[in-house]
Image 1: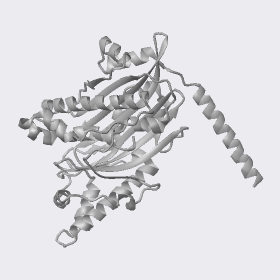
Image 2: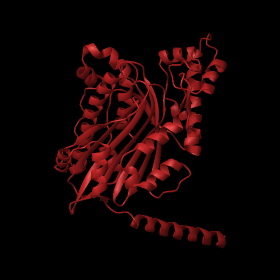
Image 3: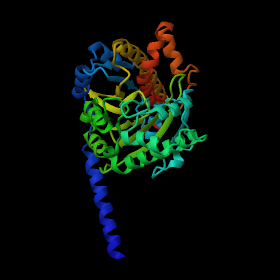
Image 4: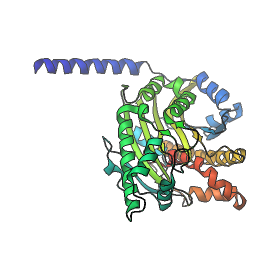
Length: 393
């Protein structure tokens, strides 16, 4: 027992020493890195940087060579110099009370089917599963899972809907449990269309293309790449599912949020590790950092999102991306204004969220004549929106 205690004590001392050494190596974000990334990779102008320094939220949609890719980068300066907890920061960059959320819950540790007790598929989803074939299915699933719905469900039985719901919950809980223990190695390959999509590959591409975090917090990138095998002090993880209904076909999505606290900044990474339709992959970062600019220190909230959506290509891809871009930029401005208000005035109660839902705002923006385009393009908007409205960062 004494030997065991001695080993534990040495481990604790070494862990504390490693933590102190790691934290002491961090410093404020160099101004040249901040400017260069915003100008060269996000397309900010000197005028926009000046406005941002004055406290105005600035948002840019990112140019991508792949027509299925969509990205946004937004920044806003925070005047307050008070310390900010991760809980306060997460609240500041979260949306509340969105009417499109039909159900949601955290996963337990380890994930279990009971965590999905409130999740039920719509009748249209049940019908889609009945007709699913590898390479031709409305819901995103692997070939093996599509075959399970064929072999394990008696579709002529009176209780086929209940059985399909039970199987979907079982499959999703097993999938998330595998991810919690094996990370990206267990991520699904979507075989619902003629072109398979390896979600692990998609996530690696998005992480490699993400702005700022590689320069500011390379240790966090390493942690995310090696999850769950990597070790990094002061990281909390959360697995969360959400069902969103918006008048068209509903979306079931699972996100993994990693919250990293560092002396010079707060970082939230949100990865989509499953979506039942529309979006192939999505990765967002919310960061609160101090930037050394022209001899002074300025505090910024930075929000970036990169997504890949099979709904943004095709004949009307340019128009769909334009619709998505305009609304997501507007939504990001709202997010940054909310964050600035909460962080600059933490003692003021948060204002009530507007009653108007996302689909109502988009419908007004696009107009009646673009409703058919909205039905296709909304998927990309919603996945990006999911990163704003989720309660877990």
